[in-house]
Image 1 (tube, rainbow, N blue to C red):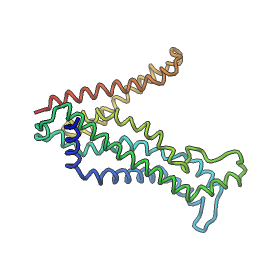
Image 2 (cartoon, rainbow, N blue to C red):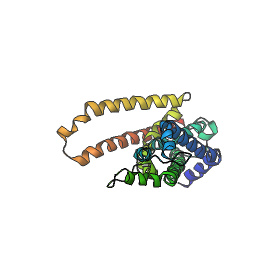
Image 3 (cartoon, one colour):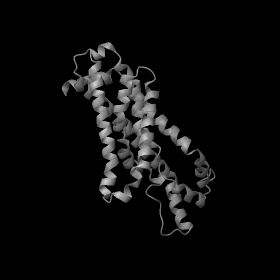
Image 4 (tube, helix red, strand yellow):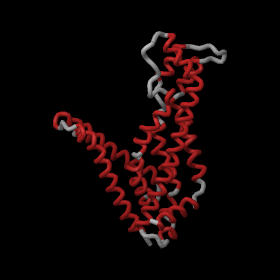
Length: 262
């Protein structure tokens, strides 16, 4: 374990640009996706409170009806894969594979490095979601609350999944974001096995596997209500299936890494 941690430290110290690239890509990705997905809603935001201070309660009601920033979930498991792609040179440097580090220790170091990048990116996305909530609440919460009263919606209020409560996306974000560790072994496998166009080949592998999985769910598993009455089994089956596939890929990556040892 100590050797793995020391090797992880060596990897991170040798790639100090991660200190800049992780927050930078997170901010660019978050802002870019927000501008892209909310482009049609900026007029609504301007109509809610105009520059002249005029309030449109109908616009405020529509604004409060928008759900929290769901695309931020994608950033949690996509951006760490991008950072790992930047570390691809580790898998092809001769002296890296000739260091006195066993395959198991090297394997663990790669996983620790990936986990550190994942957690750092996750914390930044969580912070950005919270700051988004702070902005919307500081500017629109009072107006939206008044809109419910002014328009006669006395028994209704702002939903928990409203953009005004954007920080509430962080809990499902952390759960779904763990899908990163399901994709991780396939990504590592592609980086180590394919010297050229590893990202495109990784995307191709994921696309093929997703196509097969969707076909299986639609043609086979979709009939489970007629054959299986155990709700817990129905919910756990896809999770167990993903875990088994992921574990198999981790094992395959370990043996491929062992084969590459010098």
